[in-house]
Length: 580
Image (cartoon, rainbow, N blue to C red):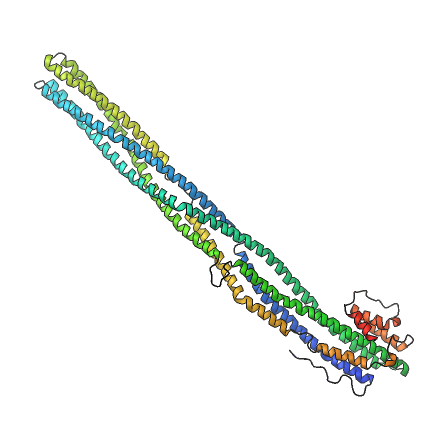
């Protein structure tokens, strides 16, 4: 920036008013040109400072927005839903395991019945052999024994096949029970801590959103403050244009005075009044300029404090408080990812258990469809009883030999009745197996908890990455921004040398003022009256009119409008100083 240096001579050596006014005019012109340059630089400095703060504000807004959108809220809700679903899954698996056990118990209860049937059939076969021996020589009894033997052989085949099928189902049920038990144990071991992890994660997300919402509110206040400050500085920068105009008004007034011709006494009075007026105007604009530029520099300096406030927000978001430490939300993301792995294991165990249960259900269905084979044993029972009764009736006509066969026939009839009861009991229990299998409900659709957690982890990963990148920008540039703004403000010296130049002009005007003309201007000087009207009509600022009315008030015609503005704070002091 160019340094403005006023001329070393305060007043020309010839001490003439013309030389003095020309000297002041030149010095003011230099000051006017320098003001334009410096206020252009001031506008550029303001833009640079605002851009730097704006970059930090944008980074802060990005960090805050990462967890403030709808996806973060939905992620927390998904975690709560996952916890609830895990609880329901535990209850469901325990119920299914109990039903599976009941189904296996029914199958176990059938095994003794099958053994009873096999024993009964074996006994009936022995009776048939005894009949063949006892009734040797009697074709009727031998035929009876052969028929019984055939029935027994067929029935034994049916029972053996049924027993083999039941054993297969029991083995499958044992496998299913083992798999379901493993799933239930895994859920019992992992779901409590898993639920705690997910609940804590949901709470952490909600807490982070709450914290960021508060920071967003405070940041909005900061943003509005920055905007207000920038608007204030932009408004205050008008002081450069105002000061330039006020300098031009003084220059125009001096040239008007130098151009006046007339009576020597009136000219001397005019020059004395002009010295007073121009001195007051210069001192007033000098004081106003100094105060306004001080406020500009102070306001711009506060932008550096705003940048420091953003660094405070950065520390509020980054809870670690230590360089390089991980953000707590990254730990939450890691926890959700780990939880998702456990849920995958649970889902796999559940899936294997369901597959095994479905297979057991299919076998139970086949067994129920195969009941006809066991049901056929009731027909065998009826046939054997009919044969035994017929044999008993014939035995009554055959004497001692017939009585022996009759005893055997009676035993076969009793055994056949027992065989029928055993078949009925088995059929009832097979129906119970099917009922238990239907209640297993292994194939219904379940929510994809692992997929939900995967989506939540992805949401957290994206939010953490976004927050981290923005916080990194603030951490990396924040300190540099504060230092840069301070440097900009330090370089921004609106009044450097300009104040001295304006002071030199005001002092020159006072030194050139005639002692005899000190005090209020004469009221009967036509040149003063004409000059006052001319000068007053050119003012654009209330402070200029205040100074003018105080020094040349009696010379103003009533028709000249006076703008009733509140004058700048230093005007009254400057006016009083003009009469010292």
